[in-house]
Length: 465
Image (cartoon, rainbow, N blue to C red; front, side):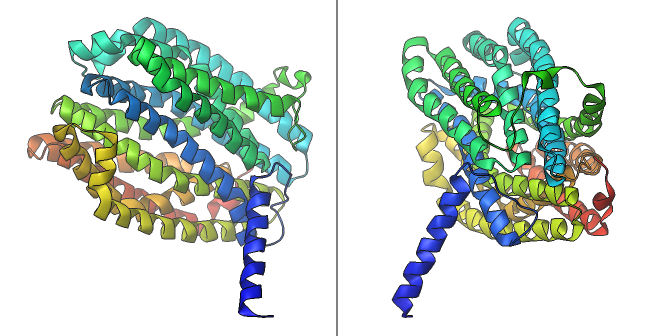
C-alpha cells in the first residue's frame, strides 16, 4: 500500500470516528481502546462546553456595543448567577455519578429513575432562586458594588436572567444525565440549538429592548435547548428513557443523590463564591477595572471550557468503569485524558501570550477596558496547564462519587489562600487588579498539585454509589 493510500485510509478512519462521536448511537465505554473512548466522549463534550462559553462571548460582544455600564451589569449579574450554576453543576455531578455507575452495572432503568429524581430536586431549587432574583434584583447589583447608573440600567436584565434560572438549572443537570449515560452528543446538540437561537435573537432584541433584550434572548435560547433535552429523555431512542412514573419521589434515590450532590454543590459554591469576592475586589478600582476583568474572563472561559469538556469525559469513564468493576481502566482513562488536556492548554497559553491584543480588541473598543483585559489574559493564562490538569483530576473524583475530596481542596486553595492573597496584593500592597490576576494563578496551581497527589493514593476507587 502506498503512502498516499495509507493517508487517505487514515483520513477516512478519522472522519468515521468523528462521525461516530457526533452521532446519537449508544456506545459501551467499559471495554475496547481507552484512547478511542476518550475521543468519542471528549469531542461532543468539548463542543458542548464551547457552545456554553459562546453564550457568554455572544452576550458580552453585543452588550459591549451598549456601553461599559451594560458590560458591568452583565458581569456582576453573572457573578451572582454562579450560585445558580453551582447548584446546577453540583446536582449534575450527583446525577452523572449515579447514572454512569448504573449504566456500568447494565441497569438503564435505574439510571433513568436516578435522572428523574435529580430533575425533581432541580425544579424545587430553581423556584426559590427565581423568586428571590425577581424581587431582589436591584439589591443584588448594589451588593456587588454596582454604581447607581449600573443599577438603573441593569435591574431589568438581572430580573429576567434570574426569573428564567430554571432553564439554566435544567440545561446543566439534564446534560449531566446524558453525559453519565455516555450520550454526550445529545448534550452537545442541546447547546448548539440553544446558542443558535441566542446568536440570532440577541442583536435583534437588544436593538428593540436594549440591555434587557440580551437577557430575553439568552433565556429563550436556553429554553429551546431544554425542550430538545426533554424530547430525548421522554421520546428519544437513547439508553436513558424516562417514564412519568419515575418522577414519583423515591427517598432512597433522593438521599443518595443528596449524599453526592450536597458536597458537589458546596465544592462549586466555594469556588464560585471566591470568584464573587474576586469580582468585588476588582470592582473597587472602578468600572474600567471590572469591565476589563469580565471581558478577559469571558475569553479565558471560552478556551478553558474545552478542557472542562475533556475532564467531563474522564468523569463519565471513571463512573462507568467503576460500575463495571474495572478500577484500573478507570484510572488509565484519567491519565490519558490528562495528557490530551495538557497538550491543548500549552497551545492556548501560547496563543494568549502572542495574540491577546487582537483578541481583546475584537471584543471591546474602550482603551481603559482593553488595558486591564490584556493584562488579565496574559497573566491568568500563564497557569493554564495547571488548570487543565486540575480539572481532569477533580472531575475524576466527582465521577467516582467522591465529591468530598475536591470540596476540601477547593476550600483550602481558594478561601484560605486565594482570597487573602488577592486582597493583600491588590489593596494592601496597592497592586490593583494585577494582584487579583496573580492570586488566581497561584490558587489554581495549588489545586492541581494537591489533586494529583491525592488522586494517586487511589481511595476514590473504593467509593460506593
